[in-house]
Length: 143
Image (cartoon, rainbow, N blue to C red; front, side, top):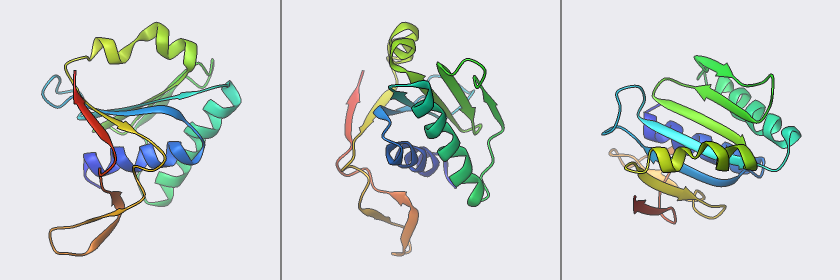
């Protein structure tokens, strides 16, 4: 799965567990460590765990395994590393405190909402890519 497609799939999975303030950050021009960050928020540690577990389990069903997961011990910030895509799932106060969006402010941001990932993307061959929702409806900004 291509990194951009994986990032969008992760955002979709987070939405399924009612994650809030989901943003996909394109950091390819800023670092060689990864291509994309997916950042989302949860209202409680129970919801945060549900979001993270859902992402990990659903991607494993597709044969995509996380290289590393950390943060389960305190459940305020969980990082899931898929190498080309790194997921940061936060409790709202922790997200505000760490301010990754401010730190990586030169990245390209895509804000993901409930309605933004419903339509399927056409591949170059004209086939529907079931794991690649289009970005139509995702607002983009340069920060």
